[in-house]
Image (cartoon, rainbow, N blue to C red; front, side):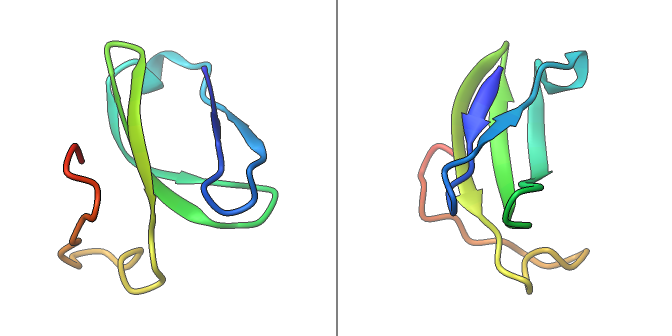
Length: 68
């Protein structure tokens, strides 16, 4: 599966079994943006851009996207 970076639009390859049911961070190696993605049963449900503060462990995230 490929998704697009929410910042630069480059394709990010998520073709690995670990991403079949995944909720967590993904890094774009083109622009270094960090996104939190949700994939359930190999279906991409959305991504949000993480701020530097949200990338820190233990920080509570607030989502603008209701499905995340």
